[in-house]
Image (cartoon, rainbow over all chains, first blue to last red; front, side):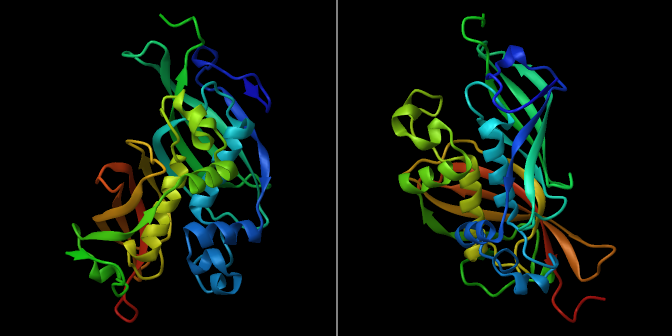
Length: 157
Length: 157
């Protein structure tokens, strides 16, 4: 099943392993990259194109944490339409290649595991693997995050 | 060895497993939490204290990605004084408890593994475990990140 944006919110019973979701898009640019870096990751390769050319990035690149934050925005604003909001308990991240000022990002997510809670019958833990891709479908970030998902009200026993 | 802020930058040869570093502090507040959430994680429990009380957070809480971003700022601005900047290849994150508007954060990091590169004798991969703690030394985030660290210039063979 592939869901698009503006789907109705999904509860634990609505999810199946292998379900995939595609987010809206977000266009990066130099101003956003530098603004995030100034506030949270003030290193030359995230702040200045000329300085960045002399580093292993070879040019201005977004902070990985900026890519992660934009990914979250895309998941929250249609990319992962689950009920109760997206509350992560933790997860893993990798950045196979840098996010560049010209990149237009979208996120493709897949449900990997679904584990109903033993102690709390009104919820479960769902593992979601998300690839953040640019306009060439190159993968810039892979995240595997565990998310708490509520059961549909009135159905939990 | 415990390093404080404004240490000279450290190269791969300067690091030992078990070395610990303590960052400067960063005071959170409601305005920062809401500004980050508005931009990157627009969910009620990160945007509005009243709405947040009815959720599992029980009150306004920072986005986990905001805690991660502030952690990066603290590492970059003195918390992990390694040469060449902090370039993460990926890692793991968990958030044992939410970051609140009153929290004053600092980061305590420890070197877990040091692996010289086989193919590139001028660098190595270092695993750093960082705890982001509040003013009560409660752990709000644990990250384990792999970082590329250069050898001291002129010493690599």
